Length: 292
Image (cartoon, rainbow, N blue to C red):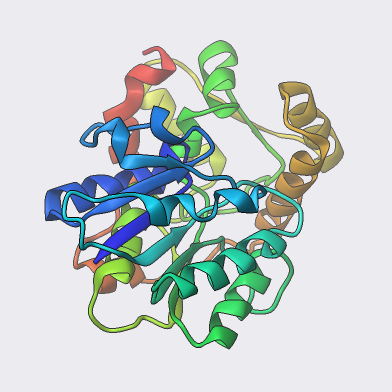
């Protein structure tokens, strides 16, 4: 078996899955718009191909890739796509193409708000069910890693502030490592998962509590500023997010503010046998990025 990992190195979870594949000696190929320019810390740049969800002419590229064992064929696909309108119009045709090339299993990266048959990724989920293929849908909550990338990274470093529109809502922040571990199991286990996984971290925290943890680790005061939704949306656009992307993020933050993310389970431990990583662990391992 071999695995196709879409999203390339811009997809945090795909990078971690690639590293697990390398350690497990499972052949894989990364697919992204940058193609052969990409590599993970433990993979060679040649282990990547050019692929664009919106350019269907690139769909054959991963299946033309030659693995070290020329008899290897792609049998599982990890689906990660950027925030694009009507993603099912691009992903569903690719699913058909991949099936024609011998792919038997698909693992879709979605989010907690995605529902079977709902808009966007929900339509992809529905299509996988209708096609009768082996599948899994990963539905993680907010990533811990978001604290260390744009725009939170800049506002924490430059202003000592975390901005959001979620108020005091509690969130079970999750590590991309844990998401990747679940996805890896779903991609490689013998039995077909044929289910979704709502993925959460080990504790419910407000952004204010996260700010307090950052303050303790960094030795300076970090605070959470909760903005009205409209002001928050305008802020994200000012930071450079396209209007459509800002509207989507506000939709997610409004859901979170309503208590939608206040949910706990032990799915990660059940699937991987490991307890999920904590926010404290993430901060301790990455505090240099915020300019301690």
